[in-house]
Amino acid sequence: MTAAPMPKLTEARAILAALELPRAQQNEISALTLLALTGLTETDDWSRAVRRSLRVHDILEEIKARFGRAYAENTRETVRRQVLHQFQQAGIVTRNPDDPTLATNSPRTHYALTDSMVNLLRAYGSDEWGAELRIFRTTSEALSQVYRRQRDQTRVPLLYQGRVYSLSPGEHNRLQATVISEFGPRFAPGAHLLYLGDTERKHLIVDESGLLRLNVALSQHDKLPDIVLHDETRNALFLIEVVTSHGPVSHKRRRELEQFFAECSAGRIYVSAFGDFSVFKSFLNEIAWETEVWLSEIPDHLIHFNGDHYLRPRSE
Image (tube, rainbow, N blue to C red):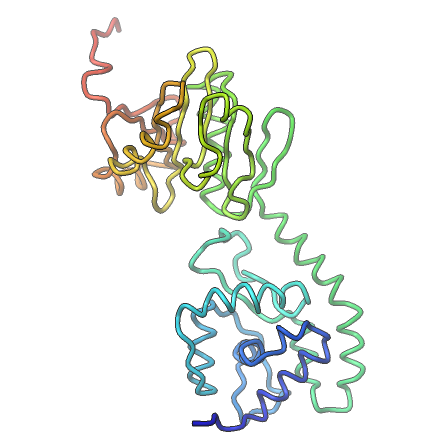
């Protein structure tokens, strides 16, 4: 059955062509994504375009409700990577305008048209269209720089060995930076950072030669914990999972890490790092024995899940 013609879809594709987007971003799903973000229906005039913040799931629901095109949920990644990313680069949309501090992989990630794009769309089909298009073309690059600068202001700085790394926004990376600045000096003084992942850049910090010296395979970075510290004096490897919404050193995770580091020449210390007691308590029944727990709100102490390993008389 042939889909019914939709003038609004044709017009949306013409707008994307006028903006000189690549042909891959002038297709149906790109045009429908643009329309979903405007709040328009088939019968609305472009002058009624509005600025709305939508998640990718919301965009697909709007496309179905307003234009009768049903896309499977697994299309979300296509929309995100092959439509919205390019729209961002072109100054058409901005990501997380309502909360720039959201983590890169937050389920609340949302997108909205830029103000200049709304102005341009409202002029489509009018005498002002040509002038607005010229204005948009000359300002879109500057706008992209502004949005990038605003997002950079929410990034998480990490100072390590005199160098400042820029982690993507989010609670997880803030806690990672705290582990390096607070946990490390207290419980692993002088330890060398072999690995730290970021939600945007999985392998932000990787000391490949250091890992190789310890017989750690380099082809399976996805199996590494969030942070790996090496205390050369004790030849101890701190394998740290940073926990905000998931991922402590559970019994299953501990077995996986034991297998992954089976050939490693250093002893292993497993640590689950939490921000506070409330998050820790929600994962209490998942923590594996023979591991440690550290909370950034009480940074001078550890909680030991090590049976009688630390059972000894106290002198005070």
